[in-house]
Structure formats: structure tokens, C-alpha cells
Image 1 (cartoon, rainbow, N blue to C red):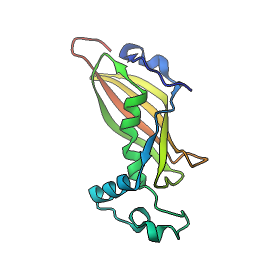
Image 2: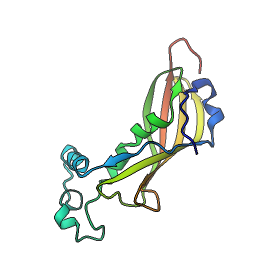
Image 3: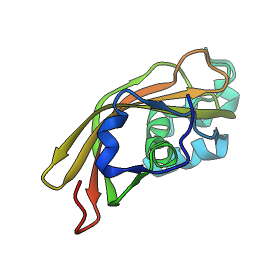
Length: 159
């Protein structure tokens, strides 16, 4: 798998179906990041924010919220899939999400993206992709999600 440095033209996005790109650059999931996410979402469960209590848990320390891992999808997508000829990429949603392994505080995450489907729409091009996020300390993915993105072409250009 290789990360592609060159943008993909919107008009040829469908030719990328089945292609996997990545891995991304690592993103550190520090305790400070976990704590900030807990404050932003008001999810202060001890397994995320209490290192002393969490060290005696089955995880041996604090772990990131699943939704914190999920929130990094946009970052990873922006890094790995750059589509030229677009005015914007709209996060259209998710079709399926699974949190398969914990993300321990202090670990780094990397992602890969596999293009599943591409369809022209009246207002752009819709792309379905499978994203796999894995922590550097894990032997299996932490999060697997099917994303849906709508790419809007630059006005006057055809998709």
C-alpha cells in the first residue's frame, strides 16, 4: 500500500474503486487529547480520564473513546484521498462502524482507505470508502468504518 501524493481528478475517481491507500502519518492519542475529548463531549468515564484507576483495569491504563478514534476519520481521509477539481468534500455520513480493539493512551494511530464505490450524483460524485484505523500497539484494527463522501465539483467543471 502506498500513500498517493498527487491529487486524483474527480472525473477519474471511479477508476480507483478497489484501490487501497495508506498508511497515513501517525497521530498520537495522548492523555491530554483524551481528556480534551472527554470535556468536549461530557463523556468523563473513568476508563478514559482516571489513569490511576484505569491501570488496574483489563486495559492496564486509560483508553481513548471510540468516538475520539472515529472523529479522526476526516483527518485521515483528507491526508490520504485528495480529489482535484472539487470545491468541497462533504461528509455525507457512515454506513457501518465497528470498534474492534482499544486505543491505549499514548499510542499512535494510522489509517488506510479502500475505495468501495463511486457514483455520479446530480450535485457531484458520491464515494463510499472503507477506513481502517490501527493503533501502533495493537495486532488488529481499532476502528473500521464505511464512510460516504460527496465531492462537489468546482462550478463550471463536469464530474
